[in-house]
Length: 221
Ligand code: SF4
Image (cartoon, rainbow, N blue to C red; front, side, top):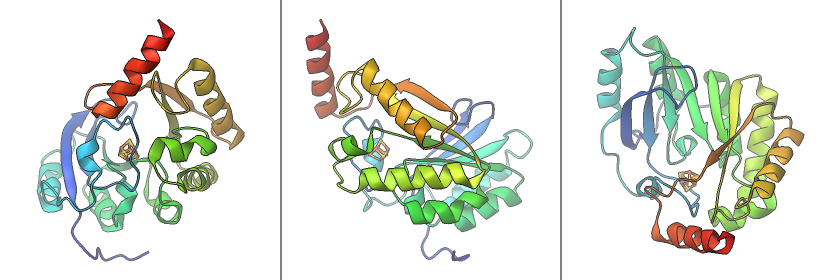
């Protein structure tokens, strides 16, 4: 892995304090711009486009973090898909400032994730659907294979993690409790020991998901 960042990180946003992005930790969360997937229910759709430049510089983030030493436990790299960008140098800087380092990922880049895993203390990993449903959910044919390879690498790595599955009316392949249970069973079959269900939120989602959600809810009524 290169130790020199080839281009500046495109930072789409910064949450200066979160108590839920890494359970049990007080963190700042850095939202990285760009994602190769296009999930129907994405509630950060402004972060998907890889061509959009950052809204603040990484140097701005470092300056903020320098003032939070002793007040925050950790920094979480989220997105978008954080592993799309070369995170290695940024993780080192975070550690040099005395923070632990966490990652939110959906596993879109298995090779990069495998390289980065030793640098993280914790990973929140999205298992979005059964592999066979991932193309419908994300719009990318290879998404199921990428997610599977990444999850297996995470489980084998020894890095602490939490697997999360988002479900709810209108989510392709994970719309019902039975479908959500099948995804949890699949993740456990890959070796995942902690799998948490979370409900898809309509706030911030695009009209296509809101329409699918309305239709699914109408069928339940
Ligand atoms: S992987 Fe995450 S950021 Fe990317 S489109 Fe899906 S929900 Fe949005």
